[in-house]
Amino acid sequence: MAEIGSSDTNTAEREIVDSLLAKLGLGALGSVRTYRGRHRNWAGTTVSGTEVFVKRIAPGSPGGARTLGRLIALESSDWAPVPRPRCLGWDADTGVLAYELVAPVRDGRRLADDGDFDEATAGRLGRLVARLHDAPCPPWLDSSCPPLPPLEELESLPVEVYRNACAAELELWRLLQGDEALTAAIRPLCTPPEAALTPVHGDLRLDQFVIGGSEVRLTDWDELRRGDPARDVGAFVGEWLFRSTLGIAAAGGTPGHEETVARGAARFGQVRPLIAAFWRAYRKERREPDADLVRRSAAFAGWHQFDRLLAGAEKQSRLLPVERAAAGIGRAVLLAPDRFATTLGLAA
Image (cartoon, rainbow, N blue to C red; front, side):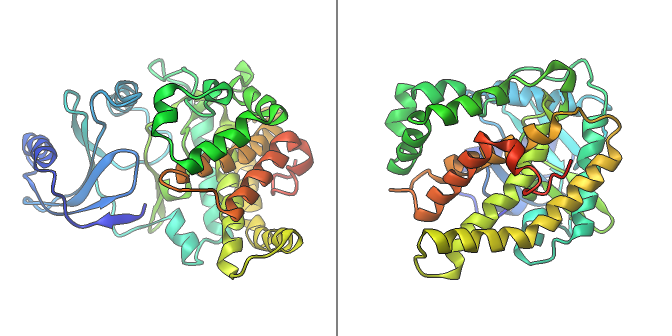
């Protein structure tokens, strides 16, 4: 998770946070750090010496009540199929949740950025995800359809979304909405077979694997639900595919089509063994993965390119050539997931 600041000027929100921490007997936060994310967050040490991570799901935010309900249901239960940071408490009225800050650690994204993400690490993460998918579904687990892919927006954008979108977002939506074959390939991702459904994290990214010593903790359970395990597997694969594609630009220059393809293939070839190690460990750990999991996982890896592009297009004036390349790769995988599964490291 990328740090974006070490101060906070929103006095009202800090008072809300400190109020919860005081009720928990921890005392107010001292100096704080904040991180990029969909929700406001703060990390630091309280006056009692406790290191905490606090996030606020603002009341009235889109989907906020449902997200908060999922998190409170999780933390109110004893369901813990995989390690996660310990929740210290919450305030349902203000949407604030406090967690133990796990330190010293590095997350999966930092390991990848530093060149320290190896096959052994990938295998550890594969086993962890498999244990999550093998866990029983508790009765409180949300079974609603995930918000992404956004099926209604594939047809047309709501007026408010259109008004608030920047040029790059609108450009990407035009690519999606104007491609009937692509939208037809995306829609089935939202209707997985009932027999395949398991507990899923639902929003898996490399930075949500927090690694400290011999333990890996999985964070950010906002989208936890009963869903398609291919969503999580495909997100892991898609993260590496997206990083490889965007890394083309890091080599400098403005390569033509053939050189772009060659650079992308070379970069992905370097990380494919990590995906293969994740998948081997996952398959070995899972008790009975369904027969179609490989194909659906590849398809979700294709969708992940658009997921990341939509998240990154905010405040951009246009899509960059390398981002259009990522969209093209995502489209190709979505249209023919069986063809690309082995190439992506998902050997049957």
